[in-house]
Length: 246
Length: 246
Image (cartoon, rainbow over all chains, first blue to last red; front, side):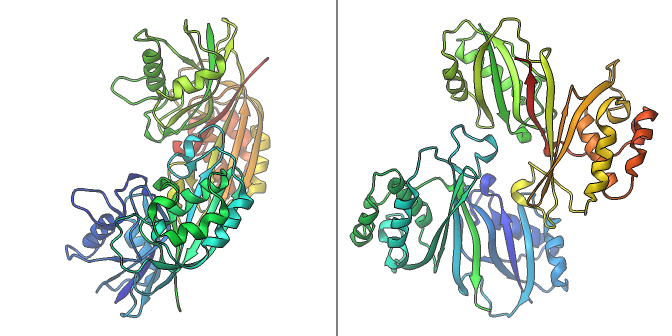
């Protein structure tokens, strides 16, 4: 039976999602919990994608196959009792055996939190990027309009990205103002390596007046990583939701 | 010159505020930063009071004496550059040499955060007590009315508390509802060891219907720790503000 899980995790103390030798990873913790539950039988999990060190997940999705006869609503309890406290299974369900967490994903939402407080908030240091400089949100919104749509995002991913096709579609970029925070929500067909963090770095340059919002099409056209902004830190980033067709 | 500082800290990775041998403490980190700043001269800091392991501070206050000629607005920068990232100096000012962070405090505010979400929120695990059971807030408010005022709080502190006078005054207890959280704010003349955490444990019993709100005067009168509720965990507690006469 194939099980689909929605998991949230605090990325602070992880070397990212994907298993790496001698590192603490989210996948490693989940596979260890499943190993215990299946009395020593190794179970491989397949996620919608990786997240980097320090990056959080509000709703990452993974699937695995199990021969255990556990009602779907009991799966979160069974796994959470074996998982460390920085990984929490939110929901589980049985799905068709041809469901694949990565290949069937139709869209993803990432959020990036920016904390605009003057003095650093000690409770947000791992959960929001502290950036106290004033931002021109109308210039940022203009830049967002240029970024939405289907483009080759070569200028917005790590230079050595080994994916041939760098064309992606951004469906929407929303700006949520919440107290002293600005949250960017990106919904797209998929995102290249570091793409959200480079998009945010570029939007901050726009908000500060260093980059003209109307130069975004030129940056896209240039297909060159050196044209866009800095990569902002991982700890402000959240894999918020993975969408599937039902 | 005597310096008064307001400091916030994330208590998660500390064995409490007060210096203890071979333990990571907030006071220890602050005194180490001051030692570096004063080129090896030890400086003792005096706080408004201690906080336990896991307990946070939004606005703890301490003072110390220094011979350094630093403008008051520069003190936070000087100290924060030497402090670990879970301790942040919010504000500093020069005060009269007879000011004392502990003895001059006229009132303290503590807050206790309770997270009522069904599924544990991974990002709040160290910052809010997860208690998903429904609470009768009107019964809790009734109990709060009985707790406010000047009472002998022997029933609401650790049994072995070695303070002779257990009479304290609670000026107000406020209940703040925020999304899926309930925050109790206690303002009082002072609080005995574990007092806020036992008060909250008792209020949760009232909210669940296990304790009649009108039995609170009987519990107070009894002067016996066994009459009140459990001590709730430290990670939901914040030393919010220390008040001084100006």
